[in-house]
Image (cartoon, rainbow, N blue to C red; front, side, top):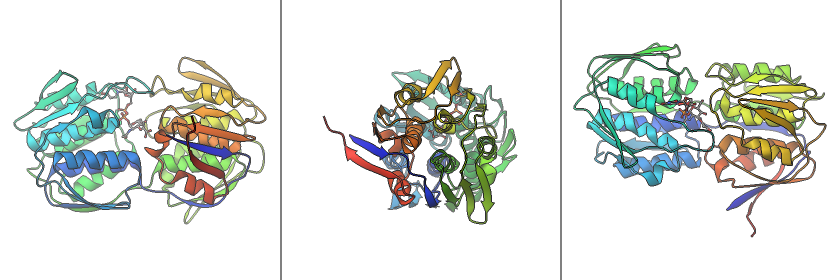
Length: 419
Ligand code: EPU
């Protein structure tokens, strides 16, 4: 297993290019299942979750060509309806095959994703929505088995604006008979990107970006070309890397409208942010100030940047309160940050962070994708050496992380774990 070794204390300087968004690429790749015709998808991040999704689609019978961020997919010949446990257990986003398979082939058998490090993460809202569209669903032997001759348009009110749940229901509704209205949907920009792709394929979707989306079902979708939106979580992670190291960084190719809540909180911490034509520049010369943060569905502060923000708050002057409202178990980075000298107390969904003057390098363990990113940021700011193990979590969602940070002046390298 690989480890990442960082010698901290160097301010990051230069320009970093943001890649395609993992959480937009995954539903867009899954949406290729919805019909025949070539789908050319560009700006796909080269991360492990994307390879897993490609593997799943190939297993289902999709012909996938290309590499290095550009794929052509053709789902004309899809036959299998089974997303097996072996793949789903490595990537929960495999659940995104459920809606498209059911709508296209009338049946789907998708392994039920279990809980994961950040919470129990049920999929009841995905299933209830599909049932309201006429699907018969049984959960047995660890699999969701869904059947429907043809899904029927319906009015569906989501109890919570689930991101992949919204995506699954939109995809399913594209081929349903009649009109589906989804209320209280998630408004994450990745959903907008998925809808843009589906619309290019001939889907009829209205209300994108609002909390009510209406889909008029069509018989079939055709091929289309699409360029995946920039990754807003990667953008935020690099901005925070600039902030935590007292650097001067240009984060190029991002969409600032997608990170409004993040820029606002960063501004509160006392960093300089300037929007330039190519992206956002972050500069920090003085000390960081504390800020209170609450994760919320978009356009609120994203849970996927909570661990990184906590690393930042660990060395900010004063006391910050960080409240996690999306996932109940997303504080696994806290004990690791303690090992680096941070002062954090967790009380239910709240973390109270008393800023310390400096963090100190230590061996730490990554527990999930974004927690790992938080530990990388802490390591970049800490005195001495930080060795992060289980970095396969990072590889799931960050493209060329060591390369990009190294080019900005970080002392970071990947090593094989020694016994
Ligand atoms: N929920 C339910 N029932 C459901 C679905 C969700 O109770 O049927 C609950 C969850 O347990 C959670 C909350 O609703 O407490 C929000 O979950 P959501 O369904 O929105 O999350 P997700 O779709 O599983 C996506 C991203 C996550 C990101 C969350 C929240 C993808 C592939 N994944 O997950 O990304 O944290 O939305 O924004 O888009 C990551 O990239 O590291 C990551 C975990």
